[in-house]
Amino acid sequence: MLKPMSIRWSLVIPVKTLIAAKTRMAAAAGPYRTRLAVAVACDTVAAALACPPVARVIVVTADPAAAGPLAALGADVVPDPDRGLNTALRTGAAHAARVAPDDAVGALQADLPALRPAELAAALEAAAEFDQAFVPDALDVGTTFYGVRPERPFMPGFGGESRARHLAAGAKELCLPGLDSLRRDVDTPDDLRAAMALGLGAHTAAVVRELWPPA
Ligand SMILES: Nc1nc2c(ncn2[C@@H]2O[C@H](COP(=O)(O)OP(=O)(O)OP(=O)(O)O)[C@@H](O)[C@H]2O)c(=O)[nH]1
Ligand SMILES: C=C(OP(=O)(O)O)C(=O)O
Image (cartoon, rainbow, N blue to C red; front, side, top):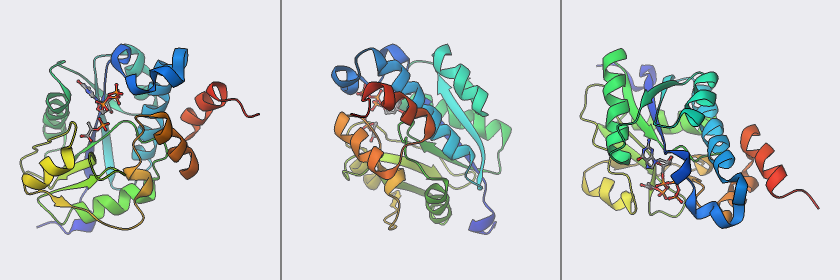
């Protein structure tokens, strides 16, 4: 058996078609909504690619306006069959199994604009000790990361109250301290303010400067 420290990861990051993305930010972001969605995904992908155990990032999207900048950062882009979030994740995981069957596979939400590579690395190291594991979101309601060891079944249960779903499916909840940036997904203006307090990545920070210019 591989030692957990030596496990490498393929991370699947789903990015919704932009016209339907970040709808809970629509009132606050106005015409900046789709740029914000792309920027947040760019910061998430850049942080994941900067994380040493991450061998590859596989973005699943049907939207060329998201695919272009994310591929330019170094992600592999796989077309989304457009049958919902968990189907998109399983499609990315199937690609990962084809290109790197010996690597662990994780699903990471695309809306983590404050993500720090060291926090992601700590979570991946902990996750490698379990067949399936997940990280709950900051509210302890949803999930920001779900992953499985190499060759184990990948059974993501994202959407709504996914923390309870992942727990019920027997996945290990990772309760490490110091995962704030990994748990801070951004769906609402309050979430964005909380992510700003942690420190936004450069792409999101640039959009926020235009959206909310400093007084
Ligand atoms: N590829 C793909 N990604 C999806 C799909 N649905 C959701 N996502 C992604 O999954 C994550 C969580 O999505 P949601 O919270 O449902 O959507 P959102 O666009 O972030 O926000 P809302 O529109 O406010 O719900 C984000 O990274 C989305 O881009 C889908 O059908 N396909
Ligand atoms: C899809 C999820 O989250 P959200 O809609 O809050 O981004 C989830 O937590 O499973």
